Length: 173
Image 1 (cartoon, rainbow, N blue to C red):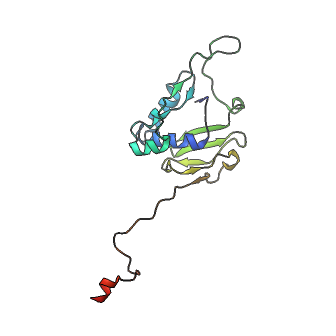
Image 2: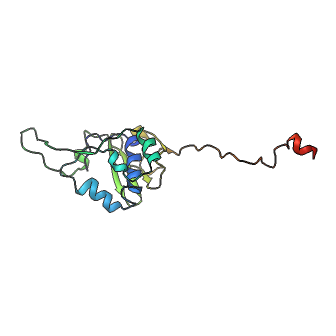
């Protein structure tokens, strides 16, 4: 699958992870069919329609409230004026690309193409709110993906912990 505006992992991974869970209900075959098989030439851009079915709060947090549709490449012509046809993307045909994303049953392999010819895999259960490093050199093959899970706020307890001093009112009784 070719995406003209392939984008860095910090924008594409949250979209792919969320699409897998919500729009495609964890059905990788349906996702691959939509993204790869049912496309005539390739994609100009992957849009927020991939987030269909995601909770509104998650969708808003990932997009900042912006909505834009996925757009397929259309009316594409070769330099000789003939209509372009879908081509198999190979290692030799990625010279102008920075990133590649390969869908596996266990996650998305992310390849920083200017540095490596394979990359680490980001599991499908990765939180889409994670901080994702965009330096292609950080996506080292056979290592852990450079992703930092989001910090969560500490839970606020309604009752004071046992180590907390008793209030004066309680202490006098």
